[in-house]
Image (cartoon, rainbow, N blue to C red; front, top):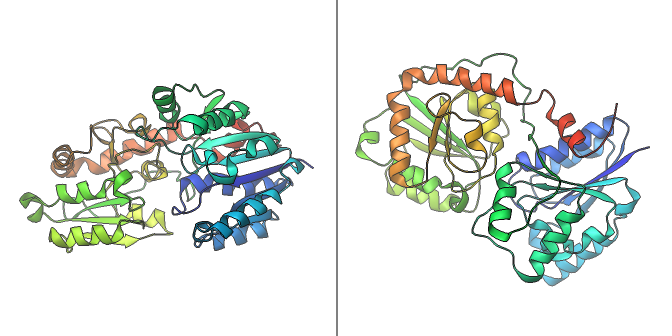
Length: 373
């Protein structure tokens, strides 16, 4: 019986595309009668997913969650738990990183020496976050030992090359699976954007990465105070309290709302007219793919691979940077083109159908060198 183990190193952020790829792949292979192992952190919010993995027949190895590993005894417990997993009892290991350098920390540093054939997944980058000395050497050992290095975006690998002069071998670009069934046809608007214009942003509340503070500031101008619009932030994160205070300080609480994490992404997108992914840095957020799948235009920043999916003034707009002034200019374009938004959404759907694979899980598993019938 062929076997695969999925090792996820994500230990705090909300469930998203970077978790969805390995989770759905594990269930898919279990149904194909593979022997599937899953080694992941046991943090709050994963209970339902963990139960589904168990029900599918996966063998689980749960690591102590973040709060436990902050103390010495927790770090020791994590190390012992990893040592108890017989990775070489599997034909292949898929190592899933939330970012790009999770493997250089803690007990994972030398783990590649104990793995069979493995693939390494990358889901983000940071041009200002560099590795030096022994950590750079460990990172290089990891990527050169991997059978495949698979990332959300080509930008991840080009940034690593530019900032650290490490050429990532055997690169592949993945398509994260959307969290609802692929639509077969255009999804119409629920309401006219000529009435109330409804914006939405689905992202972790983290202003260093996601720039929600600059978006709120851009919408605090007098002209927006006189306009009928609504902005819903879906997500949670460390900057929630700060953003709540900022919304109150700018007197925007009747128009801007922190909705929290949503399990029903499809409904959140359906009730919106235009989706915002104006971020400081990102690879390829799953929210962009899900938005165009549901025939909605998107405003994105010029980072990662997002501009490969959004054509300026065709199915959205691209903000050259996250300065408040630049954000304001693009939001103004959206307002002045309210009557075009539904047609722009139809172009989003066309691009989605043209570029997105019919089965992203099968596509990914073949990228990872896993054969099945």
